[in-house]
Length: 491
Image (tube, rainbow, N blue to C red; front, top):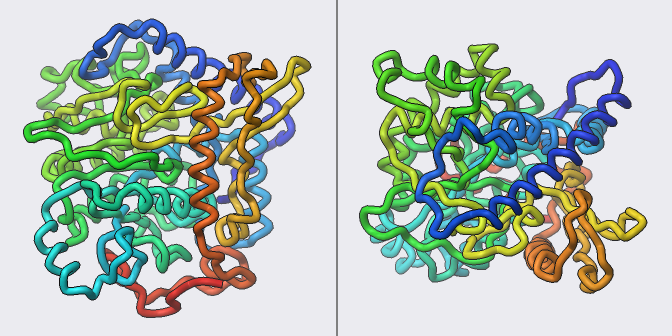
C-alpha cells in the first residue's frame, strides 16, 4: 500500500517510533494493572466510563499510529509498494488498526481443501451441508488481498482447519472487498464483493471504511445463510482451539477494548450527533459497548438487524471531518458499537484474561480460555544492557515473496531460557516463564502452519507486482468462489 508523502520522513520516523514504544508500554502496563486489580467475577458488559483516560480515545488514536498496515492491494509499481510498506514498518505508522478491523471467512464446500479432508462431491457431504445449512458457527474474516493481509490469512486459515474438525465451527469464508480476484482465491474459501472505494484496492487513507459495506453485501448472499452464529475475526489471529456454540438465548459476545470509550470527554457530542434524531434522548453513552466488530460472535439474525445502522454511521463519520478527527483510527469500531446501541442488539463484552475469544501476548501473559491468539503487539526481549536478544513483529511481512514462499521467512521462537536470563520487554516488563511460554505457543502455531503451506507461483505470480497479470480464477462476484481456471494455484 502506498504511504502518504512526508515533508520530513526521518523526523516522522523518530516521532512515530517514540510514540509506538510509549503506546505499547502504556497498553501493556494498563493490561497488567487491569488484570491485577480486576474483581471476580467480571462485569458482564463493558460500558463507557467518563473517568477512564488511559487506553481510551487517545490510546485508540495512537494505536493506529503504532499498528502500521500496508493493506489493500491490486496492481501497481512493485518498488513503490515495497518502499511504502517499509516506510510504514519503520515509522510504526497508523494503518494497523485495519488488522483489527478486517473481520470475516468459510470452508465448507467447493473445490477448496476441506478441513475434514473430504471431497465436496461426496453425496454424504451434500446431505450434511443441506442439514447443517442453518446450524453451527460461520467464521468470517475480511480482507482486500494485500500481501500484508494475505500472509496473515494463509497462516490463520491453516490454524482454523487444524482446530475446526468435528467442532461447531462448520463454515469459513474470507470476505474479499476488492474489484478483482487475488492469489488466494484457489486456497482460501472466498466470497468477493466490489470494494466501496476503488482506490482502496491499492491505497487509500482509511481502507477499513470498506468493511461495513462489504459485510452488508455478504449478508445478502447465499453463503451468509450457512450457520446460525457468525464469528467475525481479523486476519492476524491464530487458532488454538475451536469455539463452541453459545447456549440457547445467549446474547452476542464481544471483546473489551479498553481504548474504546464513548464517554471520553470529547466524544459524547459526536456520538449523539451520529444517532438518529429520534433516539438521541433515549441512548446514553453508558449504553454503548466498548468493543468493535471483531472479534465478535453474533447470530446472523442480529447482525442483519444492525447492519444498516452500521453502514449508515460509518458513512456519516467519513463525511464528518470533526467526527473523523475525534474518533480517529478506530472510528469504524465506534460505528459498530453505536449501531448495536441504536438497534438494541445486546452484546456481552468480555474482558482480557476472562474471554473465550482472544489473548494478546505480550499484553496478556497467559491465554486463559481464549480460542485465538491475536498478535497485534510486537515483542522485543532485551538484556540487562538493553540490547535486543530476540524480537517478533508482524509488520515486516508485507512482500509478495513472503506470502508465496512463507517457509523462507518463518519467525524464530523466543529463547527457551529467557526467564532465567533476566530479559525484559521493551517497556521494562520482565519476561517471566509464563509470558515466554505463551509467546512460544503462539509462534509455534504460526510456524507449524507455515510448514504446511504450499509455495505459490512467483515471478510471475498474479495480482500485485507491476508486471503480473490480474488474478483470474473464474469466480463470480458475491458467490463462494469455486475456481474454474488456474487451479490448483501452486508453484
